[in-house]
Each structure stands twice: as C-alpha cells, then as structure tokens.
Image (tube, rainbow, N blue to C red; front, side, top):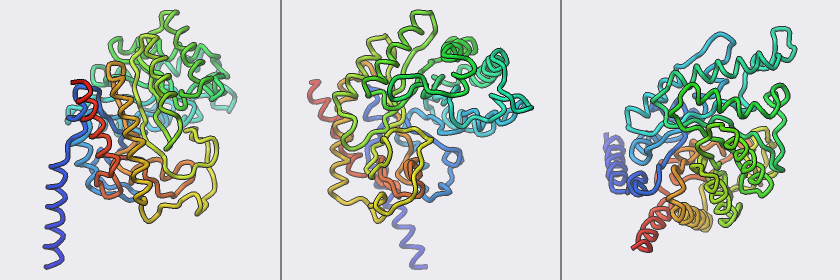
Length: 379
C-alpha cells in the first residue's frame, strides 16, 4: 500500500511539473509550426515496443501543433499488394491530428526505400514497362492524396532523389522512368489536390554540390510550370556539422526560389557515427561498445554541448522565421528516436529535447531561452 501511495505521489509531481513547463507550440506560435514524427503506437497512446514512457502521449498533445507519420503513409505500409490498400494506420494518424487541432503532413509519396517489389516488376519478375509504372504511380498518388484531400496540409511528394554529389540517385524510378519521374510525381499530386502543399524533402542539403543540384532541379521544375510549393531540409544534424552558416545558406538558397522552407526531421546525434554521417537508411554497421558510450545516461558535459547546439539552431531558425513554415522533430523523446537503431541497431541515443522518461532536458530550456532572447532583440 505504501509503495502504491509513493508511486501515486510521484505521478502527481510529474503531472504538476509538466503543467508548469512552457508548451513549445505556444512559445513559437508567432514564428513557425512545431512538429513531431509519430508512429502508430504513439497514435494509439501506447508505449514503444522498444521501451519508453507514457509521458510521450502528454508531450505530443501539449507541445506540438503539427505531426508527420514516420511510416503510416509510406507505400510499403499503405499499398503492400497490387490491388489492395490498407488505410488503417493512415486513417488513425490523420484523425489523431484532426482531433488535436494539428497540421497534418503526409510523408511520403515517392521514395526509393520501403517500396514493395511488385511496384517495379511484372508477375514474371521482369521490370515493368515505363507506361505501366507511370500508371501505377498516378493511381497510387491519386488514391492517397485524394483520400485525405482537404485534411492534409502538405505532402512530401518526392523524398531523397539526390546523391550527396548532386547526381540523381540510382533507383527503379530513375531506371525505368528517367529523371522525368520527379515532375510526374508532383503533377499527379497536384491533380489529386490542387490546394495542398507539395514539397521536395531531402537530407544533407547543406552540402554544396547537393544543394546546388537541388536548387537547379527545382528551378527547372518551376520554370516548366510544375507545382512545387516547398522544400524540406531534413535536419539530421550532429553537434558540429553542418555549420550554422551552411544551414543558413541552404535556407536562403531555397527561399530565393520563392519556396516555403521547412526543417522536417530535426534531431542532433551525440553518438560517434560511422560512415558518412548522412541519413541514407541503407547504411548499417555492426554493434561496437565504443560506438555506444552513453548507455547509463548523457553526462552533464554532453548535455551542455547538446543544449548549446540546439540554442544555436533555434537562434538561426528564429532569424529566418519569415521564411520557415515549420520545424519538425524526428521523434518525441529519446526513447522513440530512430537513431537508437541507425546506423547501428540497439544503441542508446540522446538526440531530442525529452529524455527516455519524457523529462525535458537542458536543450529544452536552451530552446525556450533562445526564443526569449530573440524576442528581446526584436524589441
């Protein structure tokens, strides 16, 4: 009985503490939307199968006014089989956003990853003909975008079409349709919902070659009359890379095209990172204890470095508040971050504003402080 009473008191203290902390969506209400990425178990109000806290449910409702699905609207979830759609997760996601007055973002219509094999092959295993693949793309986009017409604020139409050197990523889309597949995806999405936002979304756009190629690609699309309304900069950052100046150059480069700019997948990786440090999901490395140094928690020194990085990022975002439409974190708390399993499975990552128990970290306070300081400068 005594133990239950203690747990009850601790729960009350947690609720009281949460009520006292400023809500991110209110702090930045005059600047840009504050979003997060959700999985189906979060929409259901359940705890992550990988561990976590029930505090995430309250964090989502209290702090965010925009949501993006990590997986619910991807082709591999919605359209696994040729003639069958499964909208159960997607419907729950969109309804959740509506019920809580959130801007709902669709992610993603055309991507090289998480694609069912049938999309690019005939029943005999041979590559599908160009016209048939175009038909499949159009039918899929019309089915998904049309179903949620008027309910979704914007779509990541094409995701990660470029390599870091600025060349087009080799994928079945490119192999079968040629580079015109990008224009066709935007065309079909605009047909399905002429009023919805249509975005190109990619990571590492701060790299000169990749950014320049993306700018040129989007310039050509716009010149050809293709409807593109925005670009998403996947903010998968580290403690020092990319530099604030490179992020700023990137925001300004796309804004100069007349496009809305969004930070779409924000997190800050504090762990040692093998490979090129990018967000290519094909990268996977073997487990190594040296690559997982903070299993017992993030040391104070690292907490402060993370807080400083987030402060610098939000100071920059606030400087460009007239350009940025949305800042979306890729996850709710450290417990639900994809970085626990990328590019090495089973690590203990600490990239977000809330820890594994759902408690705000020093970087949360740093973000709030950055907003307060920006307000003082404005005055």
